[in-house]
Amino acid sequence: MDGVRKVQVLMEVHNESIGSVEGRLELVSIHSRTRRFNVYHAITNKAIRCNFPVAIEEQVISSLGRRVIVSGVVSYNAAGEPVKVEVDRLRTLKKENELPSIADMLGMAPDITGDLSIEEHIRQLRDG
Image 1 (cartoon, one colour):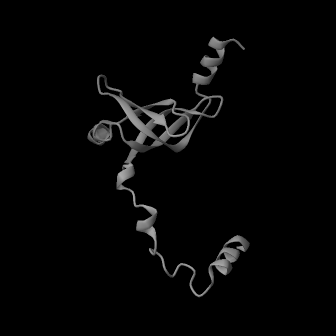
Image 2: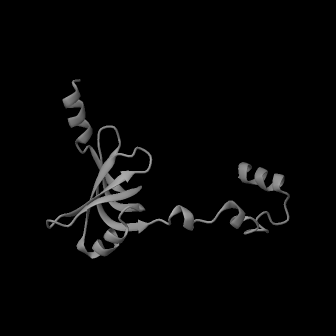
Image 3: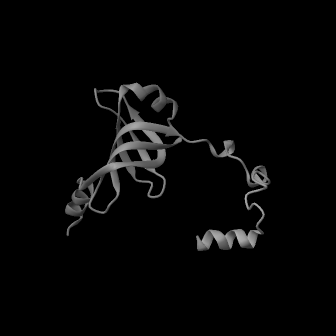
């Protein structure tokens, strides 16, 4: 398959489903009736075009440059990669410096194993 045909096939929509995509929100356009932005996928760093309703425009603008999770109808190419999302929900994730450190989490659930030792608790989790 030549390079042009391969790119064309990878851009064609082959499957759609309800789902979510995580990545960095960039390149917002409110120029036309179809408002859109790109999310750069958290794993592949490929751009995914996202169309969004006017109702979440302010949230989109305030999330520019941030990590987000977009949910809605996700379109996938032949390789199973998301290429487009018709967004119905946008969740802005916390910045890295806003997340708790491991030291902050120590001791958060002191009774998580109940009366079991850690070894017994893990064995019970594994065995169901």
